[in-house]
Image 1: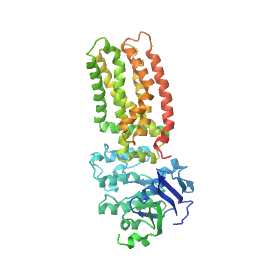
Image 2: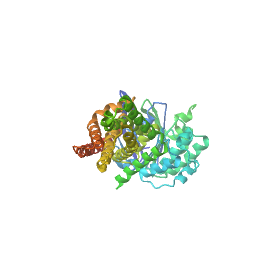
Image 3: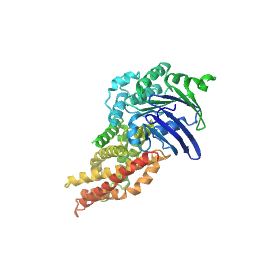
Length: 228
Length: 226
């Protein structure tokens, strides 16, 4: 986890607060290209805030995040194209169907895509014409993942990627994440399901009350050794 | 060129959403139409008064309907977290603003073009000449509501009671544009004896230049964490 930060991701003393409460306090770690990190912690421990700082959705109050040797916030316009962020919110338009949603996001980001192939990859029927508002939560998660599959990311951030997915969907997602990251992208997965995410990750970090309380190899993770 | 492509992509997205959910646009139309009818009934169908207030009633109807429309255009972005997705997607913030403002202008223009013949029939008025100036007043009037409305819609969208906050912030700002559009249309509907419609049109154009430039510059600070 102390990889080549110049080429990969370097997080130094990053803190972010909301009002008086520090949601993330002095988080530091480095990941070389291709390294994968599992982020665990109870609700409210700061996982999502840290991911949102890494995704440039939030500006850290202190500290610095560097991607490929450059300050992420300063150069956010350039780096956003290379960050794939899979958040709790599916970022879809309810009135459009699945194909239209993907085409809209592809046009906005100027990606050339085959919407049918993307839908097949995530296990959704490509010929479905109903608006997304008729989809189940799991189907929306699958479609949301298809949206980030059109990117060629350098940094992949997944926030609770397995929620609302059935066991088959989880297995499928693990394979897709592998394909999306390839050998070079840095991956960070925030999850409550370390047993599912473990096959994706090399390292682990555990957070409590905004602070990193444990770090190490993924198979030494305290949640995997304990009752959880 | 990339900027223009992104502006068009955002506008196309918004218009596609409006097309797929026509209830929104028809809601605006019926709201404004109801106001036109109520004002006509409240004035007892007076053949003297109604032609004089036709222009102003038309624009007040559109203004009140527009606050609902502008609020909805941001509600769609917030429904499933799409707004943050847009900010984090490789889309320039200014392109996002101009795309949404253009789509909002077209939505308001569609409502206004549907209201015009109804207003002329109910209020017994008509435009007999200077059609280009009349169309200019309609177009620039709509864009004058759309630019500050889109900016303030983004500011208030995440606030509680956004549907109340938006008009409170927007109405004082668009008074000059509302006055120019209403006065210009009223003048044309009553024959434009003093040739004042063109002056009101120019005032609307200046208002548009100022607000479309400023809102585009400020938009980034509204949607991004600072």
